[in-house]
Each structure stands twice: as C-alpha cells, then as structure tokens.
Length: 316
Figure 1 (cartoon, rainbow, N blue to C red):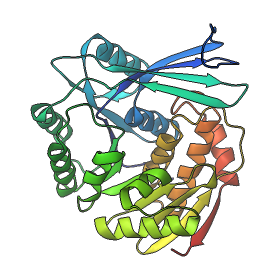
Figure 2: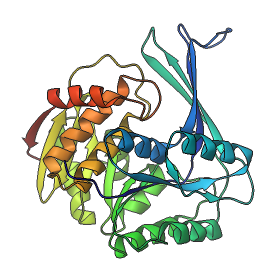
Figure 3: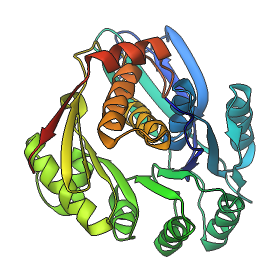
Figure 4: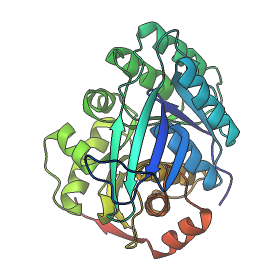
C-alpha cells in the first residue's frame, strides 16, 4: 500500500482514559483491578493511535484544559503521537473510567462531561486546524464539550471542506444532525446513531444500506454505518457494500469504532478502493476488540482479521 495522506484527528472533548481490568466486577463491593491502563483518550486520539499501528501518519487536535489536559498531552507525546491541541483558559480535561470484566466479556464506561467551550474557543481551534494549507483528511470524532455552539461546529466543518480537505465526522445527537446538513461531509455512524438521525429503524444490512444511501445522497459524500459484530455498510457512488469481520473473542469493544475509522481513512488516503478500505476498517475494528484500550491492537492481529473479513455488495 502506498503512503497514506496525512490524517488530522480532532477530538473536541478529549479525555484521560483510565481502563481497569476487574474480574468479577458488579455493582457494589470492593474490587482490585488485575490491570490498569492510563492513556490519552477520546475518539479522535484513538483514531490517531490506530492509524499509527496501520502505518498511517496522524496528528491530534482538539481542546485540552488544566492539569489533566497537560497530563493527557504528555501521555500522548510519550507514546509518539503528534499533538497540536488547543488549550482552554479554564476547566479541566475530563476523565473517563472504563471497567472491563474479562470473565463476562463486559465493559462499563463512566464518562465525565468535560470542560465547557464557547465560540471564541472554536475560532481558536479553527485557526490551529487550518494553519496548514496542505490537502489532508480531517476527522471530527466524539461528543462536543458542554456549551459548544453548533453553528461554530458547522462553520468549521464547512470551512475544512471548502479548503479542499476530506472531512469525516463520527459523533451523535445534535452534533450529528448538524454535521449531516453540511454538504461534502462524510459520515461514519453506528446503527443506533443512524436510526436516531433518520428515524428509520435498521434491522438488516439492506435497511442499513438504504439509510446510508439516503445520508450519502444528502451530503454528496461517503456514508458508513457500523453494525457491531454484523459488520459495516459503506455507500459511495450509488453502490453499497457489506464488510463482515470474523467471529472473535471480545476483550473490550471500547475504541473499536475509532479503529474502524482509522482503517478506513488510512486506506482511502493511500488510494485504495472504497471496498478495500471498508474491509480494512472492519478488520481494524475486530483487531481492536481483542485488546484493552482504544487503538492498542497489533499489526499481526489486524492482518489476521483482514484475511478473514468478507466483502459483499448489498442492495439498499
């Protein structure tokens, strides 16, 4: 595969991810973790980390705040991630606690809200993100911080697309509704998010393809809907494909959607076809689910998953 285009990963609501592997965890009681992982977290940072595993080059953007924001930046830099975060004047970067039970194969997430942002903060993020004119891929991943003005978010998406960058969004709720109305923005969502956005229930690959086709037609760009263990649908150029990963023993699904997006962007940025990119994405998501922590999988596990991932056309 040829070298991939640069990927700028924007995490508006970055977090310190504290993963605790706790066998037999349940509500109430006292437990001692078998393992603890502290890492820079948030969906965009997971994408950057996974892209690096796959041979891509990525940079981390987004807001950080306070002492925890400085710790997050230190952790990210220490693991080799390129960081261009936009610091906030007040507040603290949030902490997200991930409780993984290896006995039951279940994961519990406790996500804090994060430091608030305003229009001036988004203007500073815009300046940081668009300081380079080089065409690249820019993905906006995860929730928006409290107080984030949706019009500022929409304007930033539009400005990035107008500057000639390939813009991708993976979010939910009001932020997803806002992004879906910006022409030229590629969407990557899961089935629940897509159903909430369109009001159309997704019960099969065919209904997922129909919903993705609707989103792609509205945006004039790619639309991808992930279906968990049942794979993922991609619609491009009026055609739909389903990639289905192999059956695996799941350790933690946290970050698998982000690893999926990393696989997709690394492949597309290297000039691969949408079909191959979808297959790479599904394999990266499956590889991540076999490890703890977002984007912490190995290249060997990705290659094994890729060989066992199937690709079929779907009518939608």
